[in-house]
Image (cartoon, rainbow, N blue to C red):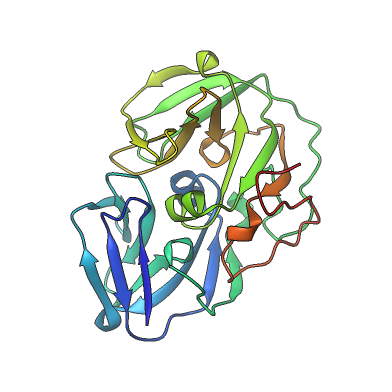
Length: 257
């Protein structure tokens, strides 16, 4: 039996049967919604049981599938293809050891340019864009800010793992530099007093504002070339057991060096 939940606990579930090995998805939809890329296992409907669903909402991303998330904290939880008796479940929202392994990785051609979807060292980019263009999956939020993206931090803490469905990747920015062309936001207040901005319609993770005012933007919601590069991994002591960090970058068990 496996159990899982969103970060705030308004969606919780149990799986009584076997879980499929984990698949990484780098498609543009998963990248935007999760803020980096998504990692999912899968279970049969007959084995899946919702224990709490008062936060559960669905976004119809295409005629082929809908995407489930928590409308209170923005955690990206499920992907349900039409006509199938199985549900894809974010591996990062599972509690405790999963015993799973990542066996496949899809849609590398849609991956962000700040990391290597095959798990190697991130590429060094010659392009340094003057402007970054960000948006949520449904288009209700669109913004620009000065480029390039620069250093990107990969965070494996429980909060980032639950909300993104895998682990997060973000870069520092000045909030005053963000220019909104369209804005339809929800904000989730974290236990530490920070605020996570996300789209209440499609649950795209957009930004994090720390309690001290520090501001960062989720790398996956940037649509154009970024001029960014993942530089290190933090809070790796909390990472999921279903994947390894293989890019050779510095990895810190806590907040970093």
